[in-house]
Each structure stands twice: as structure tokens, then as C-alpha cells.
Image (cartoon, rainbow, N blue to C red; front, side):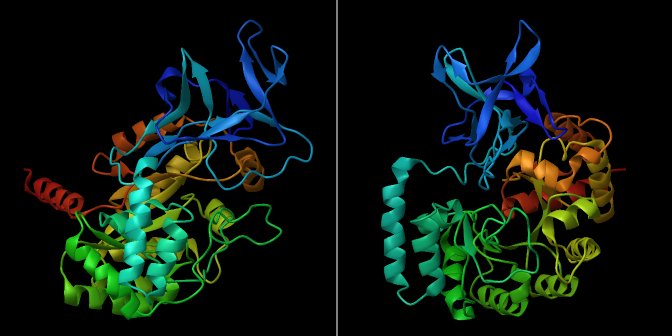
Length: 418
């Protein structure tokens, strides 16, 4: 299996970072690109156009949630190659009668692994939910678009009455992320992966389904800020009222917000209203690369850091939604910046998410080539985080009540130690 690194070179994975292809993974062909492999006899990487007289083409693997890509797929772009859509392109190969992929499992929970055999049941439950809430625009959006069209795992789980309940509220955003999956300019070269919410819901529409979910679902979470919307903090007043309304109905479950954390004052109001956790989206702990990717409008990386500090001071759980890109995330300069951020903010968790984007195009767009020194590898990055921050949780999914209670117990234990 050959792979490509963000240092713009080809490499071979070591045995630790090759795993059997997980179930529910997807293979992608890579148009406008030629396959690259390793010739052991010549000890060099070669472009492969044919194999035993048959034309070949490069492929990449898209692993299910909970898996972290450790290396990018190897290929060589041809002239005029189109940009790849916004997915993850992990190196893949074949050995001893089975497929393998360059990756590792970062979270053992199976919240997003919905088998094809379950989809008829999901669709039936989604239709039933539509009947129960015939005039609720949020339910219609989640069931018709997110479940039936895109198979969004959180929306499917809402239909199934379990775990995390998505609560999209904002059609607008104050960032213009290069890899935004719900909105792309016509000239970006990337098609948006899904339809963005195009209305602002009422508090009543939110309470109608979200409060019931928290009352009845196992390990429930109500989560503002979804991939099918913009930035939820632009609707902070609505969210504050909804949080208070939910808590008037039930004290059960976690109220979470996935956010860019651009407005510290709004974060403070929401935490005081009852927001239990925030997940802050980052591609980098370095201001220059953060700004190049998010292209923020009206806020800065300093605002993000301040929001994290405020949330922690007010007792909220803080996760970083850290968009991992092998060759950059595991580069010494980025690791040093992340360590500095973690020490300053005392975040509880890093949710390692694969950055879904055309890897070679992104490497050029972000100018990663100017970084000096080599990356240590994503498994090396995991080892470094665990060694330096033993209390830091590494995973993928938003925390439940049980996870948060474990943090409190750990904190009490550390205080009581002599």
C-alpha cells in the first residue's frame, strides 16, 4: 500500500497504522488521477496505468465515524483533474485476500454505525415522526432531508429515539470555511455535500421534539449546531430561550452546542442558561492556518480561545472538534501550538475528525510546504497527546452524562490525593 503525505511526497505505512477495512466503509474512485504504487524490486514509487493489460485507477477509502485516517491515498494528478468532493480519502490496499486501510479506531462507541438492514425501519420511524409533528419545519427538515436523503447518523438516531438529537437553528454563518459541507460558492470547485437549513425555527418547534427526546432516549443529548446549518451562535437568543424551555420540561440529558465559539459573550449567556457542553471546531491551533481555513468574518482566533476559557470557568464540558489532516496535524509546529492551547484552556476532550477535502489541493491552498521538519505520524500524535495530557479524552462523539460524571470523579480524586 502506497500513501501520500502532506509534505508532498509518497511514503509506505508501517504495520501499526494498517487495519482491516472497517465494515460500512466506502470506496471512492479518483477521477483525473493515476494510481501510484511501490515497486519493491526497484525500491521506488511508480505510476501504474495498467496491470496485466487492464487499465487501473486509484481508489481511496472513506471509513465510518469513530475511525481516524492516518495517511492519505497515493495518486498522481493529471492535467485538468477536477477537485475531489468533500470526503476523506484514506490510503487503501489489498493483502492476503482482504482490503486494508491506513487508519485507527479512535472511539469504540457505535452511535453512527447504522446498517443498511436498519434503514427500512429508520424510514418507517421517520415517517411516523412526520405524522406526529405535521407542521414542524425542523422535524420535516431532519426527517425528509437529513434522514431520507442524506442518511445523517444523528438524524437517523433521532428517528430511532436514541442518543443525540440534532437541533439545527441557523441558516447563516460568520465564517466561510474552505471545507464547509453545507455551503460552497459556485466558483469554489467543491459541491456542497448537503442542503443547508433555509429558515430560523421557532422555540416552540424546537421544544416540540427536543424536550421529548431528552425525556425518553437512552443517554440523550440535544445538540445545537449541525452540519446542515451555519453557525448557531448567530441565533444565540433563540437558543437561550430554547434551553430554558427544555429545562422547564426536563432536567434529563445533556444540552450541547457544536460551534465556532466566535462570540464569548453569547457563550457566557448560554452556559448560564444551562448549556452543558460545547464542541469547538478547529483545523489548527495556529492562528495563521486557522484563519486561512475558516476565513472568519467579524471575529478572531482570540475570541475562540476566550470562549473556551469562559465555558470552562462556568463548568461546561469543552471538546475540540479537531479536523485532522495527516502531515499537518502531526507536524511538530502544530503539535506545539495545540499543547499551548490545551494548557491555557484546560479542554476536556479532543474529538478527532477527519478533514474531508481534496488532500493535494488543500496542501497547496494552505501552503503546508513552508513548514520545516517532518511530521511524526498520526499514531505518534495520539501517543504524544496521551503522554502529555493523561486526563485528556480522545474520541469522536459528544459526551453523555456518564462521561461528564467520570470527569467530576477524576477531578475529585486528583484534589484528594496527598
